[in-house]
Image (cartoon, rainbow, N blue to C red; front, top):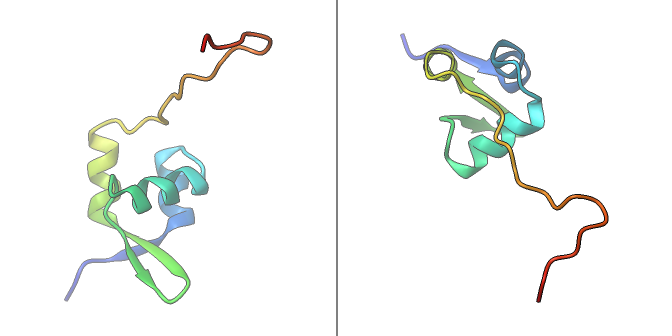
Length: 71
């Protein structure tokens, strides 16, 4: 019997992140996933690995409103 796959929605809920964040990380190769047709599935072992590693949403530095970058 093969690896149990779960919908990205369930995996995101277990990880405490949004579906779109999980999809982005999967497309970037940070999270193992399988695409079958239009569905993106995440192996349960990958969800467990991410939980053990303490996956947290990435923080992207964004400019503060009203600040301009020097050119």
